Image (tube, rainbow, N blue to C red; front, side, top):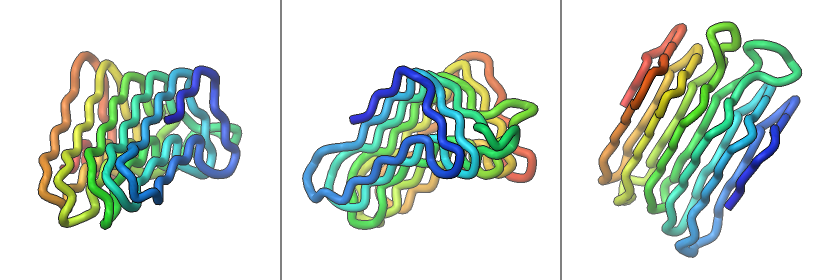
Length: 168
């Protein structure tokens, strides 16, 4: 479990990276309360490779480009269970990813259930937040047996310069 209350900065790489190779049932939980500024990487990257357990990301702080200047954030949030893992992938976005003048160069949110035997669901919830990306605004891919649910609540914009606003 990772909780941030202050600003996280990365000048070359990921803001927060959590990876589980444990075969137990413990999940990955990340809560961003203070904001993340990244150049050349992903704001929050969480992946479970084996075992059973949910990947849950809640971002209450904005994710934007860092010291490299506007347009240097790669992907806002990447959350996944890989083949060999079982569990839900849940992303709760309550603050912006990028802006009209600071567009992420990749995908805004990527949520993937990668195992054909995974019984978990993908849930992406965007509440009063905007996403600005060159690629897909939200990309949700289910390769397992679960459901995909994307919910938007309140005012917000999903903007994709060269991709699809929501691809599920």
